[in-house]
Amino acid sequence: MSLVRRALPEDAAEVLRLRQVMIDSMASAPGATDWHAESLPTLRYRLSEPDGNFAAFVVDHPERPGTLAALVVGTLEYRIGRAGNPHGVIGYVFSVATDPDARRRGYARACMAELLDWFRARGVGYVMLTASADAEPLYASLGFTRDPDPSMRLHL
Image (cartoon, rainbow, N blue to C red; front, side, top):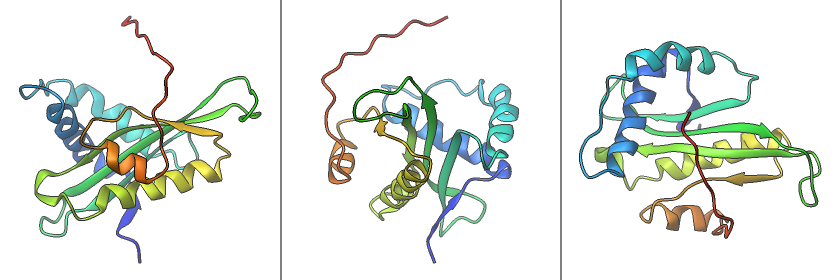
């Protein structure tokens, strides 16, 4: 039996905690957490939609009941098709996080494998993610390659 399971609405607070672990790991200092309370109802709702375009896969912490050890989240997006992806379905991976005391056990890899299977079952043409230097070897071992296209962002 797999250690990985689909996250449930009751996991929402732990999902946010692990997302914060990921955010803090990329920053020079711990970030604000006051947004968690406002985010929680939306996340619970999204986790309750088993056939939606959002999925989170988790591993329960083996030494701390009620706590998650690892998390991988993904979403589907539609773009007009093109060569190599005629149906235009793209997968996005984000919020890959492992609790600091549960690292190096293969949990993130196992969660990624489940998410990639979820993407395949939904006809995804390709998957995008942003990789930290520490995580790049994991993604490369799964077949991800660097994308030369630059991205830009506008905060509204």
